[in-house]
Length: 150
Image (cartoon, rainbow, N blue to C red; front, side, top):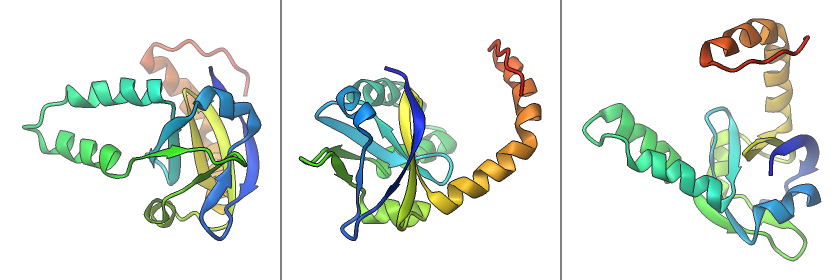
């Protein structure tokens, strides 16, 4: 499944957030959360996580950047499950690290889902909107043909 769409939600006092119904079946019974590269939390399906983990296990442990990158991904990760109401518990340390408090944005971004603090997402969107034309031109450097009028 390709995850897409943006939803606004709230984190309850216990640190739980509801996952949109549209995503639940594709996520399965268990999945993984970790710190994203931006100020967000990434949610990976088991298959997506295993694919990522397989690539990370191939990195050279003799290079400091590689070790730090592996620590970043695995050290911030945990396995989670949906409760009967379709919520997951976001670990407190992970919420604090990315600045999630109450209002969040839950969005599908292809092979994963991201959870952002709403204010942080709005700020990121403002910055992105100023540079999206330049970014789209640079996508071609990655051998991706994107023909979208922005």
